[in-house]
Image 1 (cartoon, rainbow, N blue to C red):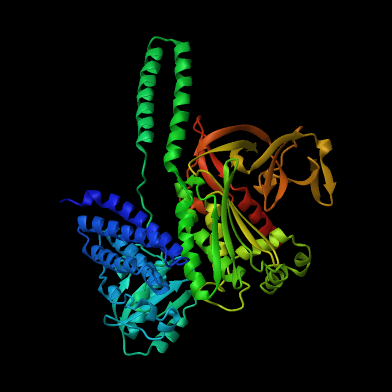
Image 2: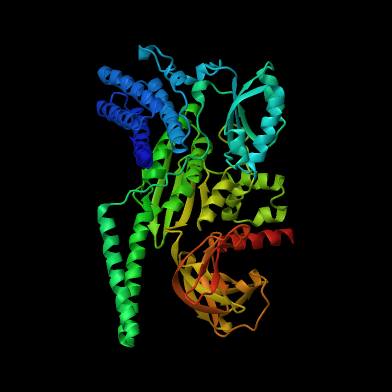
Length: 613
C-alpha cells in the first residue's frame, strides 16, 4: 500500500489523540480511580496503535501497543498511580518525537530503552517521588547524553551550536547529535541541542568547559528516559473543513463564474447600468468569500489552553506546589497564524505565574474574551503579586531609570520594565527562571501579530498579564490618514475615535499640549514630529485620532483623515521587517502602497530616544 498520501491525515489524527491523552492523564492525576478516564485513555492508545500499524510505523506501533497493555492492567486494577501517570506523560512526549520522525520522513527512533523503564508491579511499591531517581544516569547505549540549551536572545543559534560541537569534539567522540551537524549547516537551529559524547573526561570537567560559554542557558546530563523535546513543536499544516463550508465555496465559485459572464456581456453591449450592477454583485460575492475563508482560518483557543494543563501539572510536581488551573473562554476563535505565534508566549506566562507568583498553593486562571475586533487573553494568579519597589530598585541598579524617573514613573511603565531583555528580580537562577530571558520574547511575539501586552499587579493579591491581539492577521479594517502628502494606515482596533478640533481648544501644560476629551485631559502628539517629517502649517480644524498606547489615551494629530477600508496586510520582506513602528504593508485599489503603523512600538522608540537625550 502506498501510505505516503495518507501521511498528513495520520499525523493530524494521531496528534489529536495525543492531545486527548495528555488532557485525560492530567485529569486522572486529580482522581486516580476514575474508571471512565482510564477506559478513555485505553481507547486513545488503541486508536494510535491501529493507525500506526496501518501506516507501517513499527516503533510507534510497538510503543502504543505497550501503552495499551499497561492501561489494560490499570483497567483491571481500577486505578492508576501517580508514578504511572508521569510515565505515561513521558510516553506521550516520545510519541510526539516519533510523529516528528514520520513528519520529517526520518527513520523512527528506538523505543526499546523507554519501554524497559515502565513501572513494575505492584504499583503501590514504587517510589512516588521521581526526584529520588535522578542521581544516577542509566545509559542504555554507549556514551553520555548532554543537553545544551541556548538563551532565547541568541540571534544565531545554528553557528553557536556548531562552535560548541567543535569544542566537545576536542573532549571526546561525538556519536550522534540532534539536530545533526548537517541540519545545523542547512539552517535547522532550535534553541536546544542533544548529543551523545564518548569521553574519558569526568562529567564535572565537561560541565566546567561548557560553563565558559555565556550564551548557554542550561547544561544538563539527562537520563535516557528524560530526553524531552524542548524545541518548538512542528506546526501541522493541515486543517479540517466541514463539508457544509466546502458547499459554500462551491456555490460561491458558481456565482462568481456567472457574475463574470454578466460583466463581460454588459461590457460588450455597452450596458453601463448592467456593468454597474454587476460590479455591485461582485463586491457582495467577494465580501461573502472573505467571510467564508476567514472561517477556515479561525481556530479555537482550545489547542493552546489544552497544553497548559500539562505545563501546570509538570511544574507543580517539580516545585512541590499545589496549583489549580482554571480556563474560561477556550471556545473563542482566532486566526490560526496568531494562535500558532501565541503558543510559546502563553506557556511562558503560565510558567511565570506558577514559579514567581504562587508561593505554595493557589490558582492560575487563563481567560479569553472578545472586544470589538480584538481578542483579549489574560493569565492571572492569586499569588503574592509584583512588588513595584523591588522592580524600581532593580531598574535603578541596572541603569534603566534615573533617580528622578524612579520617583515619577507610573506603575504601568514600571511593570513594562519586566519585558526588558535581561531584567529579572529572581534571587536565584533555576531551570524555570532567573536569567532575565522570557518576557521580552513574549512581548516581541505579541507585537509581531499586531497585539499589545499589559501587566497589572497588586502586592498580596496576584498579577494579571493581558494580551490584546487582532482577530485576524490577513484582512483587517484600517483607518487611512495622511501626513506630509504620504498616506499610511493604522488598525481600527487601535482607534478609540476620530475627531476634528479647533485650535482654540488646544491648551498648554508646561511643554505639553493638551485637550479636554469627554472629561479627560489628553496629551496631543504630532504624527509628523514622531515620524520626523517636515513641519507644515497647522490645519484648521485639526484632525485627531484618539488612540490608546502604553496604558493611556492620547490625541494623535494628522494632516488629514482619509477613510476606513478593509485591506489585505502583507508582512514586509527582510530587512524591512526589522523597522520598528511598521507592522506590514498593503496595496490600495489604485495601486498605491501604504504602510501599516505599529503605534505601540512607535511610541516606545520615541520614549527610548528621549531617555538617551
